[in-house]
Image (cartoon, rainbow, N blue to C red; front, side, top):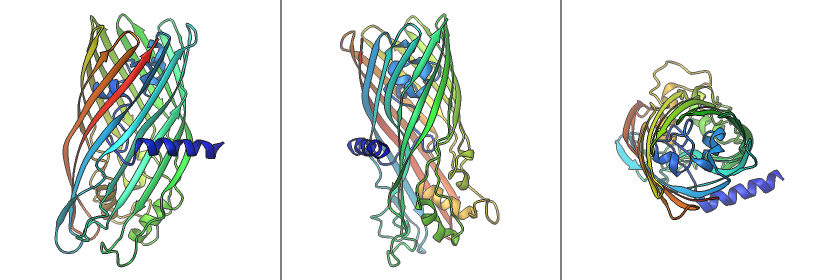
Length: 402
């Protein structure tokens, strides 16, 4: 059964051409076009079936049945400059356009119970410098991709709702490079490895007089990629690194929204616990406090949205002496974070809207821009590494409701 599920997930990923992407560290700012258009908000405002992963307690806004199908065309732009060969050069990662699929379904069972099912591309990270000929970039290629399947189950009574989404997460990871940058010693790497693991999301919400207050907790999901991390890091750390786990971090958050006469404003806060996540904590990733603000104006025929989100980068310059608890020096950590896993985007500005073809069929669109961030850290025997990172994305979603 597990092999069958894995084959289904791999097929979905192949169809979606999902390879590697990042917004808040290695996670998306939101799941679905409505949330993306409103700055990633969704903890304290319902987006119908789309709420299944963000806050399952809020699928109670579905009248009878709703299904949403769509995706995000994600376009990161990552440029790095460094000196490995004695001459400083710059190059742009070839990992620059991906399709991320999203499917959500929710149904009212009775006045107190709602249920659904969904599939979401939830996170990833990666670069591709395999075609660089300067020797400066180790021909580094990385690709982390994550997809979740979930079944939201929600109980509601007296304006209070509580929901849980059991999660089956598929992840794959590939890290390979040539350490001297000229392919004379072959490529370091163990190939693509994947894993299937379980987690859960719990959400609660209370609604009264146009005000909705919500809270969520998402469990850490421990993903094991046999041999990938240790094989990649050992040549840099003289064989001292043994960890092959790269977990999806736990998250908790709260949100509130107010709706009146077609106008809605939503504010979310969440914490992403990178510093406790296996693998990421070895590379000194710091927790992120994420603030999201969204606005929507809605009519019977259409809606317009905008939003803003900010979270300081989880990847910070390391200056400690000696080695950390995982046996890694600060220059090794900085080199890997900026060259291989540059999760450095911080600010996101969003626009979105909905067009209702009729009372059953609608189309959602969203545009997200992350302005360029620039980080310069001390690297591994190569002076400094500078990475510039910006992002754009276009999301679309077809909704059918009864």
